[in-house]
Image (cartoon, rainbow, N blue to C red; front, side, top):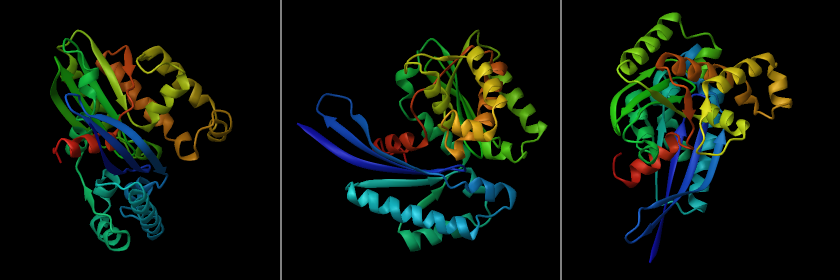
Length: 296
C-alpha cells in the first residue's frame, strides 16, 4: 500500500521567494520518498529594501501579497495538507518585518514565521545531507543567501559547529560587507577546520546550483577549486547584459552569481577544500523534511 502526503514550503529570501510543493510517498518497510511536485520562484528582491533603507517598501509589500495570494491558490489546487512559510535575513532586519507578516496574514491568509540564522542553518542541514556525508570525512556546508551565509561543519557524520554571517549576495552587491566581516568568516573557517587533514565543501543556494548546471557535470561529481576560479574570472569578464544574453541567466541571477561565487571560493581557500559538491537542496527542501519529521 502506498500513501501520498502533500506538503508545501515557502521560503521568503532576500533575493527571491519560493514555493515548493512536495509529494511524500510512504510505503511500509521503506524510507519515505520526497518527490518535488512543483517549484515556483518569484524574484522579489526584499534585501534591496531591507539592507539599504531598513524597511520593506510599499511596492514590495504589494508584490509580496500578490505572490502569497498566488501561492495560496496553488497550494489549494495541489490539495496541500500542510505548509510552513519562513522568512530569513531581509525580513529579520527590516524594521517593519512584523508589520509585513501581519499584512500578508490578513490579505493572503498565509502565516509567516521570521527565523534567525541558526534555525535557518539547522533546517537546511536537516535535508538529505546524511546520504551525502561519508562518516570518515569532514565537510563544510555553505549556504549562500541574499542576506546571509550559513556555515556548518560536519565531521564523522556529526555536526560540529554552525555560524551565520551577514555576508550575502544582495549585501555584497550593495557594498555592505566590510572587511571586518570577511576577517571574521576567515577566522571562523580556519579555526574550525584546522584540525582536519582534508575538508570538502558542500554548496547550497540558487547560485551554486546554477554554476553546477552550467558546468554540465553529473549530479554526483564535484566542482573543483580550479574550475570555480576560472568560472569566477569568466563571469567577471562579461557585462551584466552579456551574462543575460549569452549565458541565458535570469536578470535577478546575472548580478548576484558573482558575489556568490566569491563566497564559495573564499570558503574553499580558507578551509583548504579542493572540491565542492552541489546536492539539489535548499531551505524549502529542509522545511518539508523538518515538517514531516516533526522537527518544526
